[in-house]
Length: 163
Image (tube, rainbow, N blue to C red; front, side, top):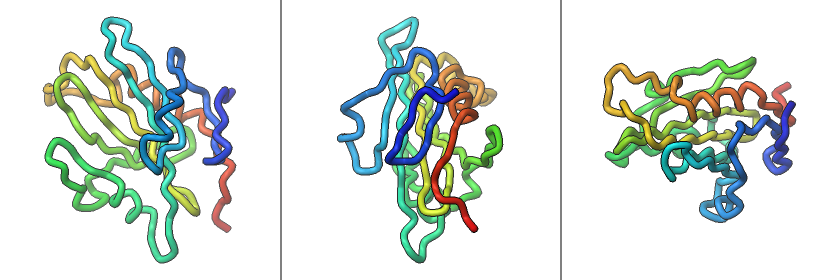
């Protein structure tokens, strides 16, 4: 069952083992609802999960919100359109997934969950990735990414639903 409830985002979920709340993260930027960190078992590198909540303003779509809040690195460029995202069904929900960056043994990805009035972003930064340059790398199979996917499979959403 879920062991974390974020009332401001109207969600609950089971936090992966070894992750702890990063109390300073919500003060880091405006959209952050919560953040969690886990120290790598082999080094002092941190694996991080950050949850952001972006409102869908009147006249905007969830796709526009997702595109406005995604910046691909290291080129610091926005995605051209939603075709750069992959639909990802986790449990009964569909997320839009994108790898933001591969750099120096780090892989950074985001999973966006559109709702009626907002879009949630579940951001994962995984350090100590040995084969980060491999063209055969399957990002979803990395341990921290697997932990996030498992967490998302437990997601309970109490936000307003479309009529």
